[in-house]
Length: 120
Length: 107
Image (cartoon, rainbow over all chains, first blue to last red; front, side):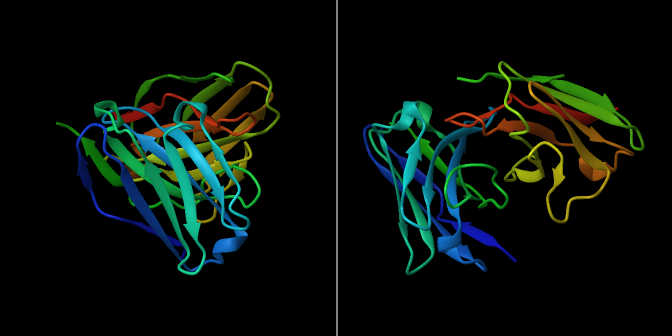
């Protein structure tokens, strides 16, 4: 079955960076894309960006455009989220989810989430 | 940007009831609307995509309807495992946006 397995929880200080990995299994990575969605404690879902596993094209939500970089390693079928200049309000659960190859549509399988805590 | 308004924000119902959750968009977006279920401490799960298509493995008691600006998710004959939070999500615009969620609780 399709699986996305994310890296473990991170604790960071304000101003630092974090890199979250999302390793995928049991599907052809370059036939799909990956979106990243975050959820602050007790809050709703917020889309951050999308990357194509086919050609590495990316789209970012405007509010994250200056601080986020999405990348992939097709040799290991892994997607990465790099978030810089962390602030306390970046404390959230970060999810990767399988998306479409050419654009973002729906997220049919999700990782288990990675909790990122930003605190001094 | 498209704004998504879900209603109600919370809902109490009993096992066996039928419930409907509504999602309204600030502008017409054809059928570009999905529904997710999220249980506490878990990742969301896709239920319905493109307004009315049932994701693989999702029970047929879940159904979606609508186009344009008004969409509904109906759960017929509620089961104990259905008590969760439900989100709509549009993909007509960029960035795609989620509704604020509807928490379905046991009465």
